[in-house]
Length: 185
Image (tube, rainbow, N blue to C red):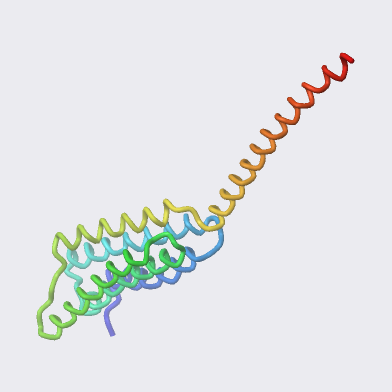
């Protein structure tokens, strides 16, 4: 069994946050988007912190080498699939990202079996940062279904009120124009 050091603990926490993220995203609660954004941000921060701790404390383990990238993929893929199911992200965008992640993971697994460890390059780390920021922006920047429905209802109500106001005003003007003519006879 792997030693439970801080980096490994954070990796496990990140994995456990994945279903929490999915439930928060797919919930109908208005606060779901805010909570989902917080969960995604927290899980993303654990990715950076566990890597830093593992390297700075010389706490790199085989468990961490295997589970850290897996936790990252689970988080990203779960967020992308959830966002596609909510119609917040085009399916083709998610499929391109997921296919790339799957290809890299398979390549790394093959290299590992050959005894070669492929560390993440600086470009890969930058890609991860951009990916996390983009997903977070979609989660936080897109209102939940409940909020969208409420906003559509308000627009419809305002539109109805506007039409009512317009036609009501027209009706009042017509009435005002008839009254002087009727009163003068």
